[in-house]
Image 1: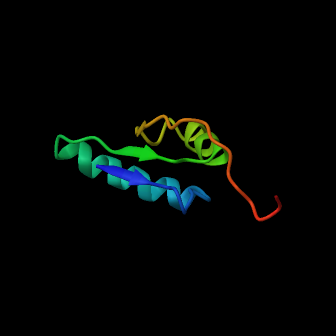
Image 2: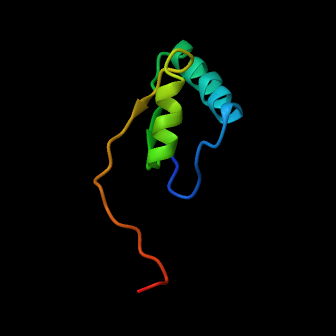
Length: 70
């Protein structure tokens, strides 16, 4: 299963808790949970929660985000 965070993010420990529950369900079913398009702050938050959650983060190419200030 791939969860794409392209238009969302993990904001706090409630998000970590939800991902932890999903990870556990998929692990019990013999599957893996992959996360894609995580922002730098989301990755940091997940790294800080590594004792609680075990997920596979898919590496995305580094790219710039366009803004309306061109």
